[in-house]
Amino acid sequence: MIIVDKLCYSSKLRYMNAEEKFAFSIITLLICVISRSLICALFLLLAMGILTVKIAGTPLRYYRKLMLIPLTFLILSTIAIVINFSHTPLDAFAIPVGSIYITGSWQGILKATQLIATAMAAVSCLYFLSLTTPMTDILEVLRKCHCPLIFLELMLLIYRFLFVLLDIADAINISQHSRLGNKDLKTAYHSFSNMVSVLFVRSIKKSNALFDAMESRCYDGTIRVLSQNYPPRKKEIILMVLFDLFLIILIIGGKLI
Amino acid sequence: MSIIRAENLHFTYDDGTQALRGINLSIEAGQKIALLGANGSGKSTFFLCLNGINRPKEGTLYLHEKPYDYSKQGLLELRSKVGIVFQDPDNQLFSASVFQEISFGALNIGIPEDEAKERVEAAIEELEITPFREKPTHFLSGGQKKQVSVADILVMNPEVIVFDEPAAALDPKHTQILNHLVEKLSAKGITVIISTHDVDHAFAWADEVILFQKGLVLRHGKPEEVFSHEEDLHKTNLTKPAALRLFDNLVEAGVLSADEPIPRNLDMLEKYIRERRID
Image (cartoon, rainbow over all chains, first blue to last red; front, side, top):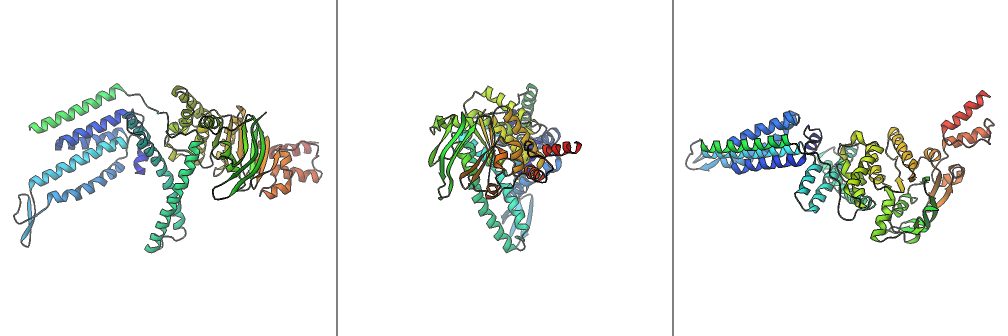
């Protein structure tokens, strides 16, 4: 999560208009998920990969690592679709185990591939957004979409204080290590539980201090801040529309074949 | 006429700790004030009172000789005139974006967005934030966070800015940058109140020094005068500023004359000694 945050601030597309990026990735994601087309998903995986790595400048090794995380989950969860236990063997493969077969059908394999590809393509759309757009910009877009303010304010504060609390947790962890707080499993569990309780107390203290500091700047219950937006560019919008049109043509073409 | 005056100010925390036990003091507009005192002497509590966050249990605070008004509108006005830069910027910065963060106070006092934007830009310029304005606040260094937290307050155009131990956890270079920024603010006519443990800086910088002890004002006056009371410094866990100590010793040894104006920093003292060698 922190690595995503770090990467998005150094992305080459960071100063692109946030609404453009948001609309592009969400619309593309919807097209991909609704169509469930394998060709579309494979094309998107490639295209979004190139966009994120080549154009936005995310280092390939991080991108690969980030893509592998959901892939592991997906493969584990689609095993159930591919592998069946049955008395009759299916067409793709069949391994006899005693009186039953561990077996699978081509249809099941196709379905699983389609599912994994679609899900991965959807993930790549979201990675494109989150690897190029800082959280504060995304919140700004959500505000324009009339998302309830309370959620946005919570997200703003949680996002900021995640880092503050992580820093504290880090410091506590180091000080525990320096006093042999992790010498064996039992001590490590004990140290961890201590850290959690200290973090809880600290976060309450921090929130009180934050409230005082905000009050001293005339906080009245609504967080009002200026947005800093970058103007949209015609060229980018045209390219994005063309991209999505191409995607739709690809899907229709795929269905006809 | 004083800009801020405290009369018999008492404050007790919910757990029964008596933090302020009858503060009387008056601060003139445009002054540079250093507030010193041991840990727990009530400096931070006093600051929160100045800003209306803590309401005194007894006694009155005056802004421009008018008693503090704790109504909603009154507090809004008070807080736009008296701003606090908190000790730990991590307790003050709530947004990950520097620009958003700084704009918060300006919008809260109700100025239109266009003007707020101008003020934010001006504060970024003035406090030399431009090189890191696009970075998220969680990747800023301690000193940079401090600069942003000063800008937070500056956009509200306050008449008084209170700094709670601004140099805590800053390296000498960032302390220097901060001092230079504070100097800029005073030059604009803003009254600056700083709590600090650095006697040398207080001695060199301040127009007035206030010593707090156990919730009371122990001394209040010109730096030369306050720092000459060694027993009071001892009571508040402080030491004499280096320049003053050396000067006193040199006078005693007959090297320098006691008629010279007291040197406020080591550079000035060095000049005295150099001039003497030429004689």
